[in-house]
Length: 242
Image (cartoon, rainbow, N blue to C red; front, side, top):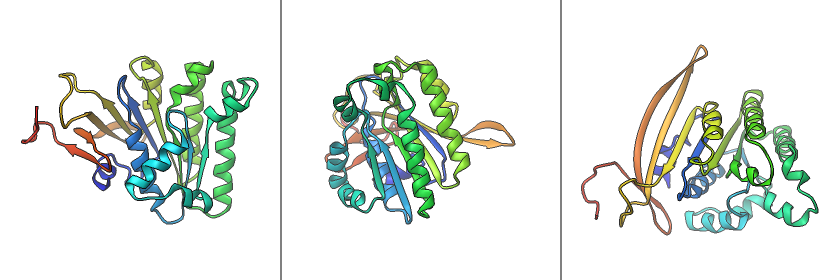
């Protein structure tokens, strides 16, 4: 997990990270690894908006990766917002179609700040989820801009935003990616499936100098998801089994 976290730039002071998830891929392993890394920071808190996976899923992954989400929830250093559960309990979709969930996130950020928490991470595990319930791409881009503005308003705040099915939501993904200082694209291998490679990660880091944005670095890594860890492989590395 440590190698994955480092390679993706999660240990660096990045303010806005996007994870672009192509069709037939699942980047939830990145979210689980990121949660573990952020929970180990001193004076840290996480606000997770569960859209693609449930809170139970992340609790199970956490046990495999060596951290306990239930303990963090009881310590109030981890808060989960579950729109899927809200849909079941609600009689209308008003809460999904409006900016209510963004307002909830903002209130929780202010609460953590008031309690002296230095490092706050907001993680949305699939913003394209809201397209299913009537939110337009323009609305989601607007909310993403608001989240980006919050990273400038609060020094210790970082936002990690995953965009699912980017092949189908290319306009949405491109506009949100323009806000990021680090973007990670999860793709399948175009040459097909392999025994010990599940797909590839394209990690692009952006820097800003006097208002001008440029690519700081870009690298491609192959990945394989095991039961308790993720193996990273440099393309062309000797020893792959085809």
